[in-house]
Length: 331
Image 1: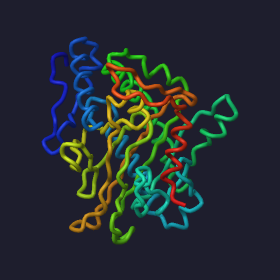
Image 2: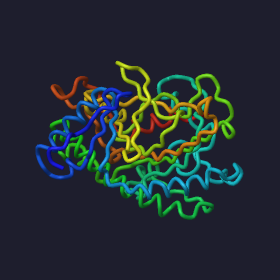
Image 3: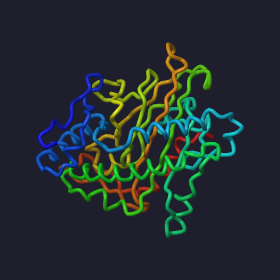
Image 4: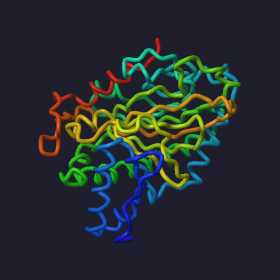
């Protein structure tokens, strides 16, 4: 819709706009430029934004949750054969992960379980393949999960590339600035189950469904549910605030690798997921979280001034990502 307003900020979360992507997809230069400006502004303050008009089928999202929940509610002994470590493929059970560790905070383990999937096509280089590829694990007890996941992940890959083109334009560096590093990218995909206290018990002091942290890669695409024990976002101006919610929208944030790449022009969005609330202890939520990355071996160098603000030491993208993943692994 050329000429449509690119976004509006949510009153409880200053600096986090909701952006309709249809003007970006329209091809109208004026509308696309307006969207790019709004994105740049949002990522400078909170590192977060919401997007509508993204084209991801709500029925697919609903079906994926139902299939995953059928697995999560199985007895622990049935799930145990699928157990994995952080960064692997399979089931991350209770106590496997503490995201606060990434900030150097010794928090209790996160109050969640996850089904975790990752890069589905092998690499030609044996060392890269050994480090970043393994077949995804599909629980036999959830027979519909594979087809739903694969359809969803195909949509995420398309949307990720569109967003990276938008981010390149928002920096004024052209639509291929990031996408040229996406010929064979890695990704992570978690389906996070946040059950109530009847499953996880009473939260310990300082314990969260997910502890305070920033994501590690380039772009995270989150499909979340509203809840009292839900997502909060941190900004310097307002501290911790409930993230805005729109059932039609996807939540987008950038990770540490992208922040380095932009020379800290954009901030890696700090966030957390609250524990089950005392006044709704049985609250249950499921989030679909796609973690975008790039092709292994990409040299990430900070964009210089006047676009960037800080020059970080260049890093190999996946040496950096592995170090971050190891930092949140419990045990």
